[in-house]
Image (cartoon, rainbow, N blue to C red; front, side, top):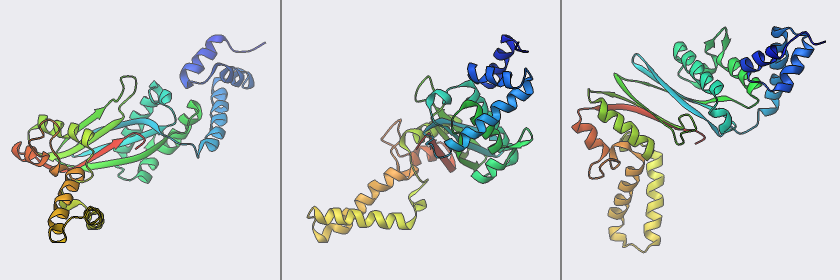
Length: 275
């Protein structure tokens, strides 16, 4: 006769999110001892983690928060959108982000080593992955220091947690405009603040490409430099935030909107799940 009840099975399932059969079998093996059953289920899941190590994590969520003069954003990745929208996964992201912020971590290695509930973030994630049954990982982290922040988290679907996240660090008082800049970044995906921030090697590579394209189009050699400069200008409008046309009114550049609002943007980060 089993020395546990259906209520015990229900309690353990709700606590861990495990399947009915696995939960019941663990209680049978543990002879009704809840703590031992939990250990059995975790060990079983841990073995599964090793098998999942090479799996792709294309789903997940973006989470961000501000603490004093620092804003931190992470991407917590998993395998399926079913897991991504689950309460346990969302709660895990909140716990992990809080631990990373408390530790002052600024790199992925430091984030995974941050302390939470007497364990490291990587260990807590491994425990949850064992229970949930999917590979889970902190894929990346961004930390920005500034006087003020605009944080924008965008849901691409009402059924899913935020899939795009933007943090903008700035000085100034126009919070509404700062938020609109964060929204613009979520849409336009700039790579740098200004054209001066684009690495010289990338600019030179682009110059070579547009020069070759222009020559292949039969452009006059005498006008080639001017044509290439014009095409480089278009490139900067793609990759540099200040050069981009403002999403809300393309008669203005983002740089002009920022300047008119009395803002100074010192940095930004944009994450998109799986990208």
